[in-house]
Amino acid sequence: MIVSASYQGLEVTFNEDGWFNATLVAERFGKEVYSWLRQRDTVEYMTVLAVDLGKINSDSVEEMNIIKQLESTSAASQAKLLTLAKKTGLVRTKSGPLENGGGTWLHSKLAVVFARWLDIRFAVWCDLQIDKILSGSHPHFDWKKSRHAAASSFKVMSEALRIVREEQGKIAASHHYINEARLVNWAISGEFKGMDRESLSSNELDLLAKLEVRNSVLLGRGLAYTDRKQMLEQFVVDHKTPIRQIA
Picture 1 (cartoon, rainbow, N blue to C red):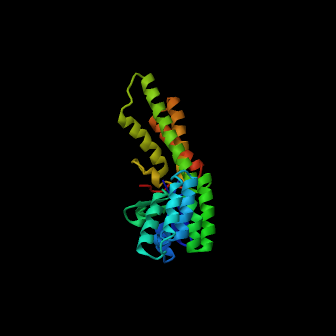
Picture 2: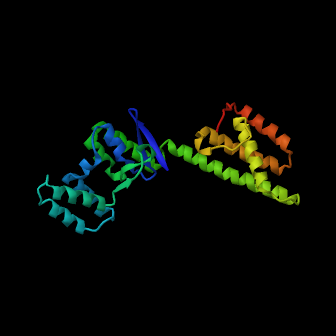
Picture 3: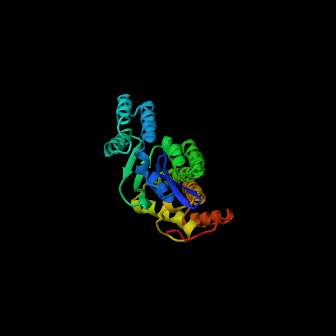
C-alpha cells in the first residue's frame, strides 16, 4: 500500500514501511538520486547502517575502505560506490512511470540524510512523516482501518444471510449476496450497482460498515427486503450523511 503526503504542493510517496520514492522527490529539487548514491559519504553511511541492520556482513566495510583509496572522481570509484550502495539492500528500483510508483526507492532510515542533501526544511518534514507512518498515526491509516472494518462487516452480513436462508431450508446463492451488497450500496449512493470501495473516504467506509452491520441485524430479525430497504435509507438520513454518486 502506497501512502502519499504533500510537501508544498509536492506529493511524496511512501510505502507502509516508510520507504520513499527518492526519484520523485529529487526531481522537485533539480537533483538526481544516483548523484547522491555515488558519493563516498553516502555509501559509507549506508554500509555501516546496513551492517548494523543485519542486511550485509562487515566485509562490506572493508570493501568501502578499499574504494576510499581510489580517486573519488574516477569512473572506477563511481561504479564501485554505486554497486556497493545497491548491495546494502537499502535501495530498490521499480520500473514504470513515476505516477505509478516507478523510480528509485530508499529505506526509511535514509530519508533524513537524503533529504538534508536536498533541503533542510524538507528533511525535517520528511522525518516527521515517517514517524507518523511507522507509528500508524498517519491520516492514511484512518482510511486503512475503515477499509478493514468495512471488509469485516461485509463478511458478517454475508454470514447472516447464509444462516437465515439455511434456517429457512434455502441455499444462499451468489446473486443473493450480490443483492444484499447492492442494497447497502444503494443506501449510500442511490444506485443499485457495484461500488469501488477503494474510492470511498474514511467517513463513507465507516457508514458502509454500519449499514452492513445493521442489515445483518435486520436479516436476523427476519424482516422483508422492502422493510430493510426503507430502514437502511432512514439510517442514512438520520446520520445526515449526504448521498453522492459513487462509481
